[in-house]
Amino acid sequence: MLERLAAQRDDQPIWVDSLEYCQTRILRHEPLPWHNPSELGDFFAKMDGLFSSDAILFDLGRAYNDLISALPGVRTDMGERHRPGYALKVMLGDASVRSRVLDAVLAVAAVATSRKRNMVISIPSPQQWLRTAGNLASQLPQVMAPLDPRQVETGAIYLADNLRTLAALAVDAIVIYEEAKIDGTVDSLEPYRPILNIAAHYGWPVLHRSDLEGCWCYDAVVGIAASLGRFAPVSTETRPWGVVSELSGTVNLSARHGAPAVLVVPREADPNDVTSWMSTLR
Image (cartoon, rainbow, N blue to C red; front, top):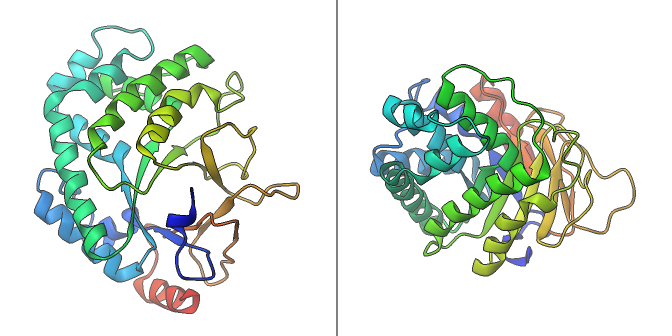
């Protein structure tokens, strides 16, 4: 499943996560132009020109969160019920926002095609998005009790339904991204099954990414093609994995079996340093 993701670089793709840095340097801290597909496409083209990442990473969660944040009416609807999952269901089901996000994905996919890059859709994990949606609905950070596997699976169902809107696009992979550590009550990725099933239906490999935990720190489940984490697996691991590293002058890329190494460009990094570090890697 990862063969089509491998670059012509000794079979080790390098994915550069530079959205925060480029928003700072290219847009000068201005909001991302989600409402203007042409401007958004130009922005991603400039990102690619700076870093030549082997994949263009589209952060679906960031697109929804930014758009919903500017729509108080939708946020009010999201907060009408307090059961876990309701806010996320309303958020992902809003037809107007879905349409805008799809236009944005189409614009970025066109850039990926023209530049012969892999198109990768990054989505927050179900439990992460459940919490984010709850916070957007209340407009105040919520202290949510640990989610049980059934609640996480419900969130995964809503995410899987949303991914159907991308069915006609040339998507090369889906990344499920954990921004925080998984709650202790959810010790497996099996509740993500609805996402894995819809991805398998459309032929999209799924990678799991956690910048705070190691690769394959959870038992492998059918449908997860590779694990991206803060450090390599503790034991000898034959399954694909790649380390997520912050770009610096001493960074050491590490990945195995066709999985990508992921470089995160610090938001406030000096452009001269970034150019020097990237030229060394390339």
